[in-house]
Length: 93
Image (cartoon, helix red, strand yellow):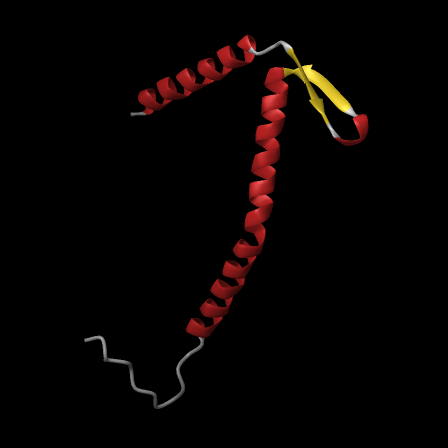
């Protein structure tokens, strides 16, 4: 199984390497106010991918923070011992 994963990783690497070698022609990206950037097409695609991952990760932060706070709140409420004289809940049996 380990050799199959190495083979899959090698195939992915060589596919991406061939993609990069086939897309070396210059591409111009035009920004606002007349500014532009010229670079190899593969770098434009890579920069777009990295920017998309960063925006997606930043969009997940509020929800992640909310879930983390709720989990911490739940963990502290579960770990507190029951009051003295309390009977265990047997409704599920």
